[in-house]
Length: 331
Image (cartoon, rainbow, N blue to C red; front, side, top):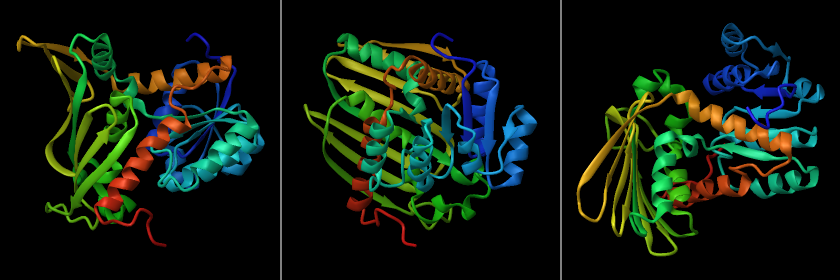
């Protein structure tokens, strides 16, 4: 891949499912020096069964070996503290989404990144989805007029996705607010500042979560554009849909499955056309990992930097507050 140095050394902190995915993809991109760490031995073993890597006994030991870049794939509350440690050790940082569980310490991260002159990129992977990229390109072409409204819907059955869901922090605190991709997509597609955020949320299904399993969010952007976002953790079958409502037509992307996407468009004449696409979930991650490594190798700017990732964190904070929830968990 152009701009990616196969001699780069990387440390992956966190060997859960997303850490395993990044390890496999980075190896497939030709990187030989991949190191990993995780306090849970079972997670490390699961990763090493899939991908040959070097295991470091701790995050601190991994940083002491001076990797060129660190992938932070740990729970959100750990993202900023670990990213700051990595920056201070001289590494560039790729941080999984969301950038943080609150905006409280983001200014500190910006300050350290600026001081160390190291890059920080957040894994907003849906910005690299083939169908969504094509939709954004159609929007930019002007063929469908001015963007007026955005509708994002995401719903899945949490017990099916994570049979251990009752033990997860998500079930006790953030609930469906964890489905942050749709919030970021609204920000990315609108491409303008946020004026107002309103939200209602509740535990409405029989999934038996303490945290909200249903979220309805409304965002008002500058430039006469509104977005509505539906998030739920009980829906069967799984659904994911993004609609762009424009003055001269509609663009719609639907991909309930990772291996298939439908792009539907209708212009001012009102005639629908549909394009079916075969997709590979890993393609998004290859694209974002490649973009990050290319920026590190060439000294260019990362595509999803701190300021961009901060937007969705702050919107979710405002939405939770409007819904009457504590913005930060107790304890």
